[in-house]
Image (cartoon, rainbow, N blue to C red):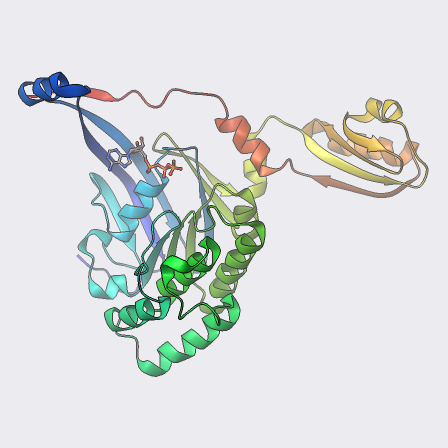
Length: 342
Ligand SMILES: Nc1ncnc2c1ncn2[C@@H]1O[C@H](COP(=O)(O)OP(=O)(O)OP(=O)(O)O)[C@@H](O)[C@H]1O
């Protein structure tokens, strides 16, 4: 059933996805064995996930490899049917893939290409114009904007196969957003790109969000993407949502301390600073210390009292450090259920 005029952009309740994986031992004998005694394994990729995204929100969707991010985004785009639970995106049930729904969303997968390989990107854009029934004037206006913002001028007429990865990704983004979707599911949109190109993609997404009030759900292994774009973070681990909050609150999850950076007017030795925290770097007039979270104020006050301090800042640990702490351990994946069938 389709629900019109939603208050929330994305509504997810108790979403589950199980994959059934058939297993076969290697070689001819393995093939014969699987013929008479087929083994299948059920993988619970997404388990009981619930969240709502408000219109215009930009949300970072993080988690270790195999956590269930792509599976969730595919369910929200209607490419996969949930095994159980509810998903509504701008009021539509994604699995139905209604035309009105597809016009409002897009899914960009950094690892998969959607452009026609042997043709110039411009031809793919025209195909998308026809698919999404974009009126000519809107198409030309959007193309003008995207060409300028993404600097597509010199590459639109080149065969896609001859584009660099960065150039191709810019064209992929333009093609995927040509119909001005309200909800963007971006799965690793900057993967493999150099830092300049990553920044260009980020700037484009930020600008699109600001101008069209689009809702964005973004996965990325580059934390800079997430910290630059997302106000809110969802963390999924082994199929379950384990965190939903802002970046600062995520940093609190780690046991690591905060970073105090000081700029001094008189040089101080690392030994002198060691009494105030764990010295990460020191030398001359600047120093960086890690201090236990609970003692930040007291240590900062002592530093200000004991040294001639020109500047002092307190920062959360880099989000990479928090994620590495949360997921760095080589934990076994959720124990799969093994089913033996004939
Ligand atoms: N088509 C499939 N058939 C069977 N199992 C699958 C399939 N796709 C994904 N899985 C399994 O589901 C789990 C979740 O995979 P998913 O791709 O959603 O994770 P992810 O968080 O996107 O990982 P990554 O960051 O590595 O891309 C993994 O255990 C994966 O092996």
